[in-house]
Image (cartoon, rainbow, N blue to C red; front, side, top):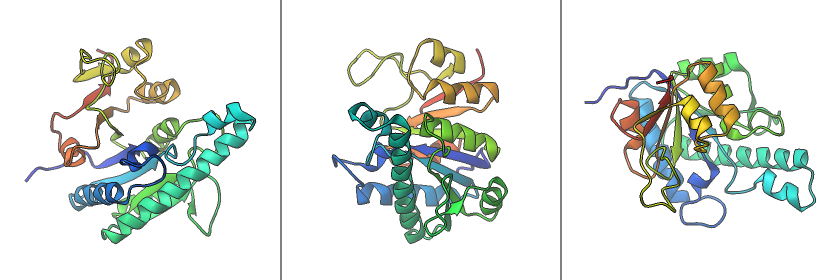
Length: 240
């Protein structure tokens, strides 16, 4: 049986990952599959924290160009991440995985407030922790929130789940000759503007030597494979 090479991980899910074939909202089947895959790695003894975006419901940056202030739009986007987090929590609980949601914006009837020590204790007790509402501040993406939370809980690695197989030298959707990287440095990602994550998130990982593995979430078993050290996706890490 494969053994995990990481003890504590942070999984970054985009809101779009929950869409499936829908144009809006949550595809129940997709979330059920994600919950089952997370249950598998938790059963291996891996401590799992999650940050999920809200783009399947609301995008603050997009609406800010239509008359709503950027700060207000960003707060609305944070609330969308809370909705996704509560939904994912329910599917994880249905799968038998004890799960807690911690929100950077206080809403005690819905989620615990974000407290680093409490989050770490949950992880140590085998509970999945979902960090909602981004950083709690406007102008910061959920990618940056994921980097921040990964560093705060001292995760071994950040797993960036996407709809493609990893990091390419150009958009593989529109360029059939795009080349997939096995490994790439943080600085290369920034200088080549590869859009793996926003520059603030990548810079935080670089400054603190937090490796990022970018992989395809849509291929069943990839999460477990990455956790067990299989050659899946692209490793963004130390300078070459």
